[in-house]
Image (cartoon, rainbow, N blue to C red):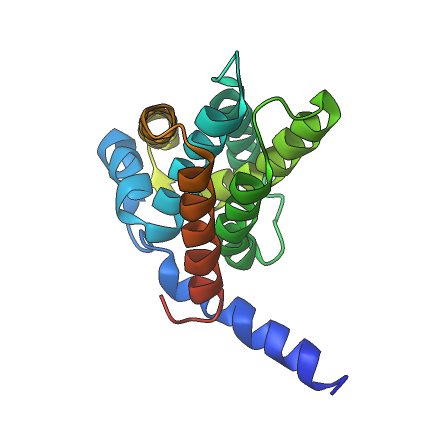
Length: 191
């Protein structure tokens, strides 16, 4: 059984590479703008950050998005500086599951330290997303960065709006559970 667990973990981490789109020639603003929308792993993760923010943050609802965008920019800078991010595809896919767990278990009015930990988790995974985006850019990196930051911000705002319209704990749990299941399916290579 001890051998089975690491083997399963490696197999699970191999599947996410298939979930990530945009491999090949990517450059400029338009490619950056479309990638977060057409890459299922990015789309779900970015909507999830918005959902978490809208359901959990009473004021300064933008904090989740700003954390994600800032750290995604840092991840991009690391990539362009030639600094690797081990297992970046697996980490990106794991982010969907992690953001789903945050959405399920966080609550409005939770202690400030818990919100800070949640934002740190969001920031860590955002670095992976930024690193992956930046690694794909073959030219016009500044345009590509601008496009994926704009698209990401829009997806966060859509998630926040959905959460504020559906502001019921049962719907928060249902959407969070759906994210957990989606992340699990992508990790297992099913999605």
